[in-house]
Image (cartoon, rainbow, N blue to C red; front, side, top):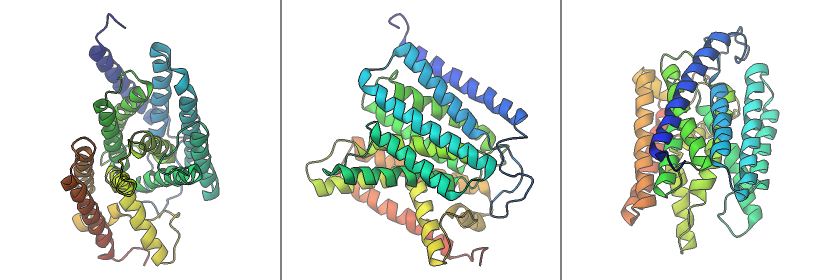
Amino acid sequence: MNTLNPDIFFTFFIIINFIISLILYKLFIYFSHSFGVREYQKIETNRWNPNYKPSVGGFVFYIVFLFTMIFGTIIFGISSSEKIKILGVWGSASIAFFMGFADDTFNTQPILKSVSQISCALLLILTGTYIHLFENNLLNHFITIFWVVGIMNSINMLDNMDGIAGSTALYILSFIVLVMYQLNTNIFALNFLILSGLCVSLIAFLLFNFYPSTIFMGDTGSQFLGLILSYTGIEYIWNLPKMNNHFYSYLYVFLLIALIYLILLIDTTTVTINRLLAGGSPFVGGKDHTTHFLWKRVKSERKVFYLFSIIQLISLFIAYQLIFNYSPKWFYIGILYSIICFLFLYLNTKLFVSEKD
């Protein structure tokens, strides 16, 4: 590697990943009309788009993940201290992928999904990946389980309209890659390569998933991405160096998490509150998400996509300032922005009568 410019090599790696992703999406679209779609013969009235489209995004995500992990390990090696953690990530990502595939194919029971998600969290904890927020590790482990399960469900719930879940995951992972780069992470470190490869794969996915889409990511993709999003959040956001003032440090970390995962957290919180108030279950699909109510206002899925993108990108800009150019001004701007976005998206759901009503 000493004779090869690292930037050229990394650029080559990105281009190859993009080409591989495009080829795989094309192949899966061509061959997937008999798998990866949950009971497509029967119209699902609780889905926003009941039309048959192959749910193959997750297959490409997982293949790129495995390819990058194997490629990075063979070419650049991996330290002994990282091996256990990487095995934990691979194992939990595999559980998430196969559980999502089973759900897309057989429409599994919610209890199986919950058990699988908790298993993912426990495997991460057992291999050394967990939130270090409090002195009590039992509390840290509980928060880690809650976080992993919550994010896996959040991205799954947000996957309800063309381009929304994929773009949100892309923005978050790209931001974390940027944070890693700014913190002088080696661009050939395995985590950096994996996240960069997944970002490129998501860009390729959005070429097929942008409205009007030709493919969905399905539970296969959303569960896998949820695991990756929760893992990277633990490694690079939750466990950022803490401030001296513990109370203020907790607020700072929670604010960062709220800003970086803003769209996911607002949508899940809104849906949960509204369904509980209506006496329904938060775990049953429906057309009562923040995306659906925004569509009722603007009558355009593309406008909903652009609006969500703007909201997420602004929140990530504020989070970046908090991490690298901290000042009390940005702290209070972050709090105010999070509250305004939540109130805007939540109150918009109260201005329309739900189709279930």
